[in-house]
Image 1 (cartoon, one colour):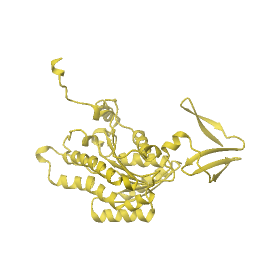
Image 2 (cartoon, one colour):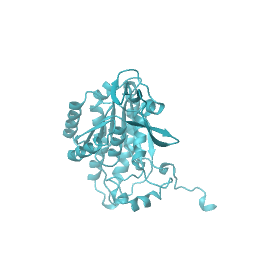
Image 3 (tube, one colour):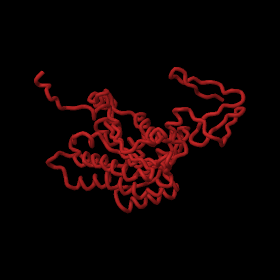
Image 4 (tube, one colour):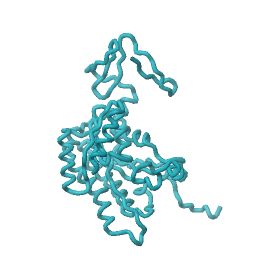
Length: 319
């Protein structure tokens, strides 16, 4: 039997000590290797500094729209971080398949996939029931489910506003409100429950590129995030949002579907690339671990510097 050590940033395989080796697996629990055997040991947790800050071991999370794109990136990061992740999307079979893939990673967490629809009152009621059947507390809620609609200004239909705002804003609000009993059950002064909403750089910057209702909906998500952060603070629930730039996903496949397309889009990003799954996972673990307990009302730009880039040159033409 062996374990991994870090030496100058590289992983080095090492033999276990003859008697035992103790390592942290999460809040309130350690595991000992004793004579080559693995046995749980209940005692005060002995965490490394990084584990203390970013571990989500033992937490239960719900990720909507978890089968693809950023939702899958979030779910993967949480499973690798030790959480039990409930994944829901309209295509339940897809969520079940992704959950099976995540469970095959030999990661410390686990995943469960099932159908869930946030686009209607009936769908939301069924989703809340499905979650309640699987857990009596929810440490983490990630509102990732969303839709978009792109069309030129002259032909942009009124129906696109109802559909996009209904899912991206209305569904997010109603699901969060209806899951408050489970979030309250998990919340404490030392370890608040966490809500992460999916916004977008398109809700931060005045850009639509034909996705008028989508951009407006994401600006609304950012504003609603701050509102709920203020209202939920007394309940010990933090509410933050991601504002991602370009990532490879089903929604952006038209522009990032191939590596060549992704590189081309990346050239327009100040840091010279599009986002990666690890960028999402790291931000998720930061906000959901103990390192994020004092952060609420944040709109976190995961955009490679796009939100800091200005196309306005006040005196550029005079130089």
